Amino acid sequence: MSKRIHVRPGKGQSKMGFGVGIIFCLIGVFMVIPIFGPFGIFWTAIAGWITYVNYKNGFTDEQIDSHVIEIEDDGRDVTVTEHGAYQSYSYDSKTTSEEDAEARLKKLQSLYNQSLITYEEYEQKKKEILDEL
Figure 1 (cartoon, rainbow, N blue to C red):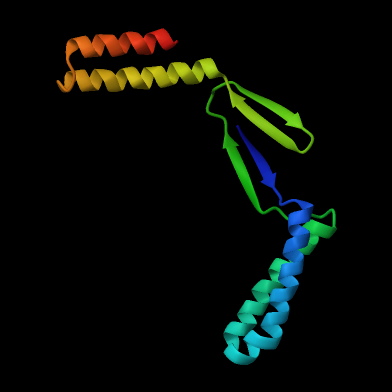
Figure 2 (spheres, helix red, strand yellow; figure 1 turned 90 degrees about the vertical axis):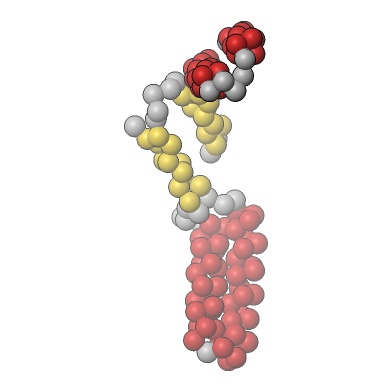
């Protein structure tokens, strides 16, 4: 199961982007197109699109997503908390710390098997990791 989160810029940010977009469109029409030709048309078209998107996001209720985040469910317990338009996700910390400890113990065992640490160092670090749980 996955969850999609649609991210949109704030109204203030979009209004500022709209103003800057108008300036870039004017620069494109009066300076870039006459000097650079086809590149100027491309420039002005991109500036026009940016201006349009910022207008929609800043002045209308029909906002355009800047990007979409997709969260895959990996089997861990997820808590979703909604605060108005914001959602926060937190994983069960016990599961996460146990998985982290397991990975650290495997790494520690690998170091010992390769004779990179002594048996005493292995046992001491293993005890520290297990005490953290």
